[in-house]
Image (cartoon, rainbow, N blue to C red; front, top):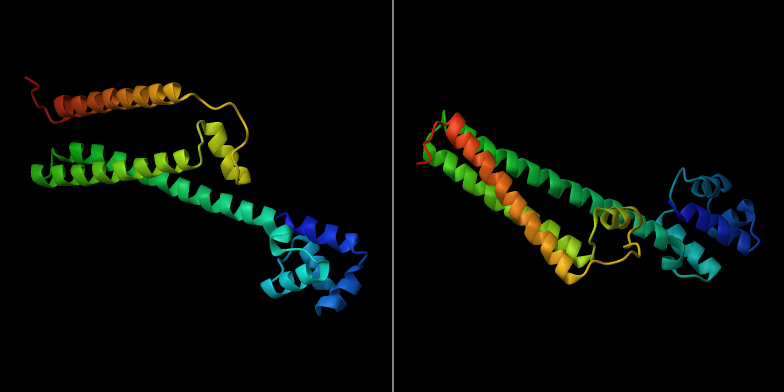
Length: 192
């Protein structure tokens, strides 16, 4: 957390010792020490007292920490979406495989639900990256680490569209190939 360095910076900038600062905001010297070493985090009342004492805004004191918290939250959400997408893919192919033992209609319904949920998850992931205007995996990782998109060269609209179309075609080919292999070799369906 960046607030530890901010606390030390503003305390020294105002020429306070830990004891002096502790007396000014009515906490123990050990509490100040714990904040500055990162063992504990100041409560909101203490943060507001520090901001008032130093004549700074709360944003000045904890801005970097808020970016870190947002990035971690975004990372958790993105990981959950990726996991949900993987589960949908596995469920879809699992329902195809299960057609050998379970009723056809039940398996088709499960397949429909899995593919629909998978599409919703993918659209959500695409909209998140488009909202952040991230183009590459490196930019997404940079955003998740720092909370901002690192400055890099941006792809042209044509290149983005070509990559999207190419990825979609590749996905369709892989999906059709896997589905055909399962249908012909596992379920013994005839394609003709």
